[in-house]
Length: 162
Image 1 (tube, rainbow, N blue to C red):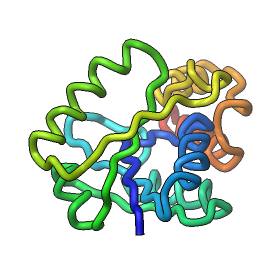
Image 2: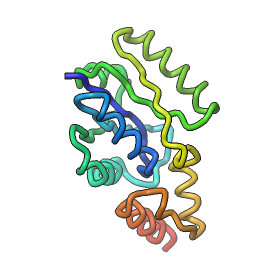
Image 3: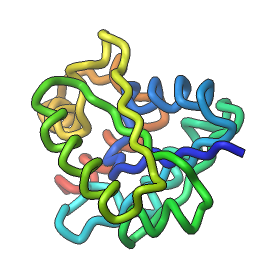
Image 4: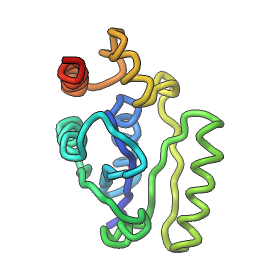
């Protein structure tokens, strides 16, 4: 079984992330969306909330599942018996950072391949950070995230401001 890991913080999941997941399952037998616990970041949503938001978003996607991890990515890839890491590239600026990560992961475990995928052009400008900022300022994000993510984001920002 060809398994790929699609890691990220997904704070929150965007339609760009969902696009990559839906296309990655066409290339692999199984895609694990791995939500990272990253102590360097201060996510808006808790790890459990992010996992739940992803789970709801991918329930229609065959051969996709969600999990979380808090260790070295290549170790997690080994634990899940995966062969590849899927990473999204939106722009040239993403490439340099992602390329360095891919090379380091290869150095740590030469059996793990990194597959770079570009989102549909309608999603190349999306990032979770930008989505949160638009929502924080009262902008319309319905075209950028799944409906349940939009509702959760609006509720989270509302409760944070109270």
